[in-house]
Image 1 (cartoon, rainbow, N blue to C red):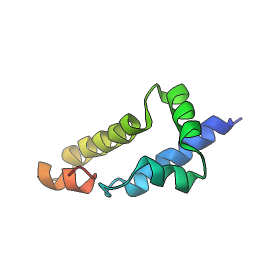
Image 2: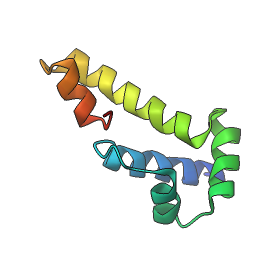
Image 3: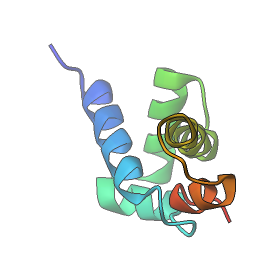
Image 4: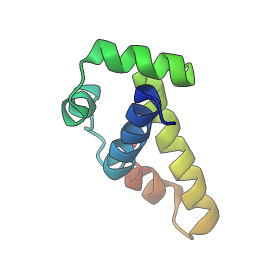
Length: 86
C-alpha cells in the first residue's frame, strides 16, 4: 500500500517534471501546488530522499539534462535552457 509520504513524493516528482523548463520555479511554488507547508515538504523529502528541496529539484534538472544530452542533438546551452538552468 502507498503511504502518504510516497504519494506526496510522487506528486512532487510530477510537479517538478512539469515545471523543469521554468528557471524561476521555486520551492514556494511547489508547496503551493502541493497544498503543504514548506516544513512538511522539507521533512518528507529529507526522510524519503536524504536531500533538501532545492537539491532534489536540482537533481531532477540534472537527470533530465543528462537524458536530453544522450538522446538529442541539442547543444549544452539549449539543453540547459530546456531544464531551467539560467
